[in-house]
Length: 263
Image (tube, rainbow, N blue to C red):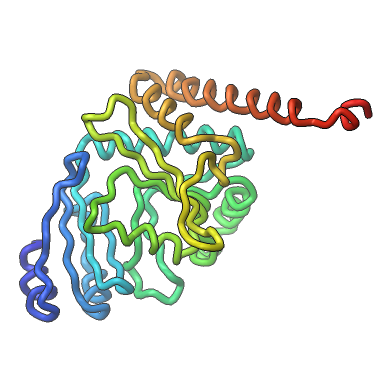
């Protein structure tokens, strides 16, 4: 099916052949370049029947179809759990959007960016819950008007690095990238602020989940991966969050002026 798309749409009209890549986690990724009109037409196809992750981006003229590896899906599910538990503890509310497709409100139906995970946290999570309670129309309108606070990706190839900029264009505040390739003893996580005044920049701690660091998340992912019950998985994340919260309190106390303490 992908070869047909490459021949009929990308190769025939734009001169760009379809290209297949193997991601660092073993996923198979097909990338097809086409004009915006062709991308919009192909959005009518139910690609999810054959591919676990789909990106139909008319802005870049890019179609990305991924068949995730077992390791990809495992790490995406683990990171989703980590964000859910940590987000609830640190902001009081977290709402997973799973693999919702993100797009501009005026983009053609069915197109958009499909991350490995996306979240509203804190006030925006509570507002989205209220919209869900009001019905599908209200929830859809809220989603169209409010980009996720946090997006997660566990496998980005060099051929599709531009998706980071697209998430920024869509209004996502923060992106977590996970490198969990088999050669790494512990999965490595990188935090990126996408709405910086200047450009995308690396973070030493999260702006969305206050005080949480990439090292905290790496440790949590590794611990959750070795857990065999839901309680163990939740406790593994909760311990790290509690440790970070206690460290933050001690840091604030240490930074309090003498005059403030005297009061």
